[in-house]
Length: 73
Image 1 (tube, rainbow, N blue to C red):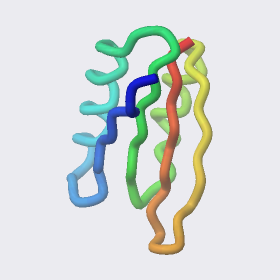
Image 2 (tube, rainbow, N blue to C red):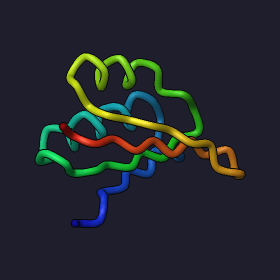
Image 3 (cartoon, one colour):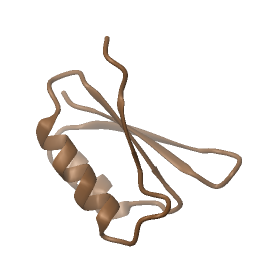
């Protein structure tokens, strides 16, 4: 299995992390994973993921980074 692609959006201004994530989702194949790193809770992204059937989970790192794992069905 390939390493997941990582988008580090921690130093980017909104809406750039969301835009980069949406572009990456279009390029993903079934079963591929994408990791998004941000300092916020990207509620608009969760809505898009849910609406399009992507699986996702998030965990908060000790440094305050929200690590979101997204898998294409």
